[in-house]
Image (cartoon, rainbow, N blue to C red; front, side, top):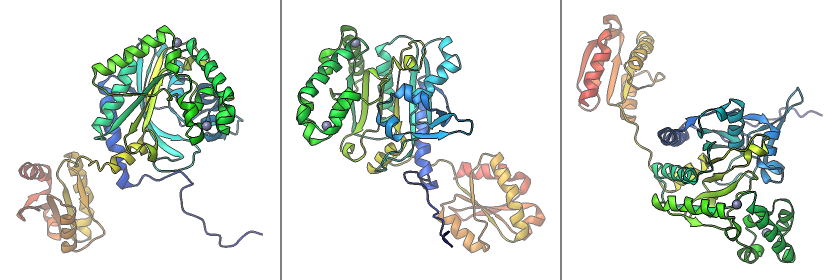
Amino acid sequence: MRKKNKKILLQTPKGMHDILPSDEKWYDRIYKAFRKISEFYGFKKISTPILEYAFLFEKGIGEATDIIEKEMYFVKTKGDDLLALRPEGTAPVMRAYFEHGFNKLSQPQKFYYFGPFFRHENPQAGRFRQFHQLGFEIIGGKSDSIYDAEIISLSSELIKELKISNLLININSIGCQTCRPKYIKKLEEYYKHNSSKVCKTCNLRIKRNPLRVLDCKDDKCQDIKKNAPNIIDSLCISCRNHFKEVLEYLDELNISYNLDQNLVRGLDYYSRTVFELEVEGLGSEIGSLGGGGRYDYLSQLLGENQVSALGAGLGIERLIYVMKAQQVKLPEKQGKKVFIIHLGDLAKRKTLLIMQKLYDAGVSFVETQDKESLKAQLRSANKVQADLALIIGQKEVFDNTVIIRDMHSGLQETIPLNKLTEGIKKYIKNI
Ligand SMILES: [Zn+2]
Ligand SMILES: [Zn+2]
């Protein structure tokens, strides 16, 4: 039986959130800083669709990962295509790189992106099912260690620009196709030997995605993990040199880092340098702010020729969480505030024209059209700390004039409407 009067819940689905006007300014601040730095370093903006073919991620990220096994949202189209809401940004950028022939241009190509991503995770502090991420990618050219340092330097510049303090950079190398399998074999042997001493997940991971055992947070496994074979000891000469060069570049840049042999990052496409950004004291609360690394084999996983590539991604909600926790102040909005006051219906109609003139003059304004009395509107003007008020009443409508009132001194004058721009500019210069 259908229930009558069932109340519709007006709320977002679990893990999805509105970005309210009061929060948009944080997103804007991050995006502006990110864009400024990216463009300065020669990165070009790219926007890929929210929906992609699911196999792009299955092939790129790897099927034995949490993202593919548990967290990806699938969409079946009417034409029977299996699409996915993008869970990350790197595989789509790589897809676009080949689809649009960026591989035929001068190499490497540098991209940056910003937008929503989706993962079906348990929502917690700074973690949502629809979240926003920014990322940089360098694709093509040689597997040159200077780019690894550049990506890390960019990430740390951005954190600095956002006035976030106590950044920790954890870094590791997970080797190449030559040396990694040898290391994995050692790791498998070691964990098989200790299988009774580690958790169920570790026993499962060592079979399916062995490097992930190094991610285990279970107390039970910590001792075993600590004594596990170290990947750095297994690196081949060329990976070892590559990693050494990355660290030397970072030293040159005075960027401090922490060598973390357990840092592996869970995605199949990584090779050589991997890193994570964390804020001291907030790591246990929100995890890492983001991270990245080299993914020289991603193009091959997607069925293309091998191209060197690397990148980084940072979670916007986590950045905002940290900025708020560290009481970072957003820069004050610059420019003077102009408040429009109208008295009576005829004047109200003129306000739209005035707004148009202000817009043409590049002056931002505030208006409260739901208040009628002069007193109430002046009060509102004071409340928003307006510098100027433009007052238009019955008389001004007939005379085609407007009153400009300096809210600081209280002085005012009447000027012709067609001289409004000049009039305001004069005041704006003075206040
Ligand atoms: Zn190697
Ligand atoms: Zn474990």
